[in-house]
Image (cartoon, rainbow, N blue to C red; front, side):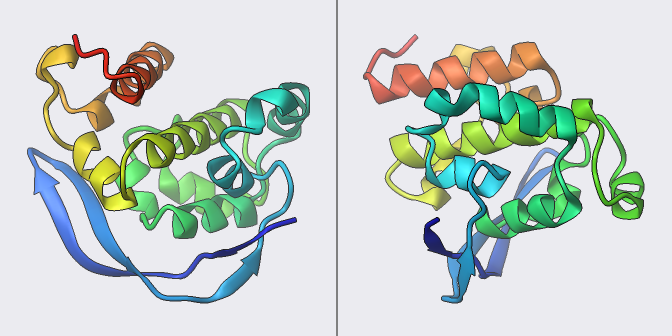
Length: 169
């Protein structure tokens, strides 16, 4: 298991046409990442494809509320920011201890996407800024706005890979 700084403090909020993402400043504190948890996937994005069968099992079992909360802290976000992306309401999520397959799958998709974004962009803040900036390659839509569907996730992921390899559309 790896140790990672997880506590983040919000400095300011970036808002563009209804999409808000907090820009954060790290505050060091230690927490253990559980292998194959969504937070582990963010930190180990390069290793995660080799563990796809394990991740499928984790999705089938359902993501635990504690793992979701840890992911939110690790990426420096709030649950509210993901309200329109998740297939269930935040208030429903707060009542459960383990989430449905559909919600769990979306959480793991987010974890993979943020892991890839953190790998490609220079800083977490650069990636978060890119998520809320309209992209010509994505039809002048903000990448974050497309994350409410699997097709949108695929488009955003493909665009990040293009950026990684300097292949601009």
